[in-house]
Image 1 (spheres, one colour):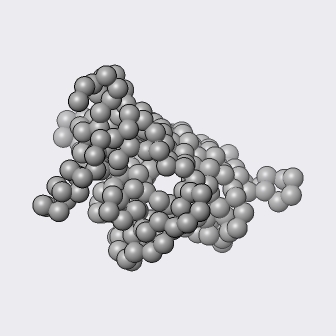
Image 2 (cartoon, one colour):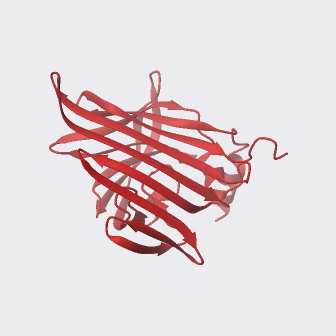
Image 3 (tube, helix red, strand yellow):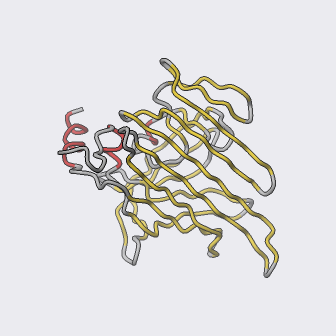
Length: 227
């Protein structure tokens, strides 16, 4: 616990807002972009907006298209609301969730789901994601049971060239993937998974996001809130 407290203290002041942007590849071909935007609100909440736009084409013909829009509201380090809309190649999904008492209630593709108050959505930016055994599926509104194995430190591409030291986590269970987070401060650096027979992988393109440790703790600072 002492090491975690020191890490949180060392995170320093967070920028007022910012984003994480990823180029998404299927094999060696770019298939789209995934962008997360972090915005402080006047009421003290934090809004995290997620935009995913993917497409697979053969020549001039698009054979697969995926769009996802996700708006998360956080307060005091806790997810208090989520609303998502997804078009998975013509199949639509909607998820609406909110904090309710000592839990989090979600309405999704499988009806009403009651989740724990500290539920982590599958937007992956939250630094405690690898430590949690259950995640909230932001596309369907399901609770996912996962096992996460620490694969150690590897190198990941950095925006503009070079590499970043990252800790790799292999995920099995209801999802199968590999996640990467920056060492030291566990900022999300990407994901890889099977996409209909070919690997889909994320490469970080831009990083101006606030400190994820401070966001997770809920002590980020909005403009005009003082020191």
